Length: 194
Image (cartoon, rainbow, N blue to C red):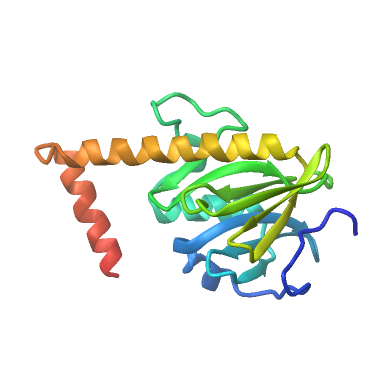
């Protein structure tokens, strides 16, 4: 098939959804594929890949729910409403840039999400004028249907959103008298201990 993700081992496997959700602290990319229906390849920063028989949006919304957020209600770094192509920040480890990974099949998504919070070491290699390959630490690769300059720009913007998110988090923590911040920190510590 012409529009599939380049897998390191040229194979994929199906895993239970719950096992995938428990590993969300190290997700590098969520890439849509069409294997046995609308599926997602979850790529981790440990170079591990798993195929889940759920759409990208479903996994992204579950990642947001784990942090107590709703994807549609997540705003930009300055509180403005996000547009369709804006990066999405779920937590301090996940700020995703939205990149086109395949041609749409019916209502299935064509866009994958690539984590700009951990991708300080990624390479973009042009294939044609309108497509390129993005690789993380030289191990995991995905074909993107944007030019290399567009991919680099979107990843740079997502990285700026992540930096802004981290600055805002630090600024909130520096005001310990804020009751909401203190209760949020206590809640996060309790969730972390579970």
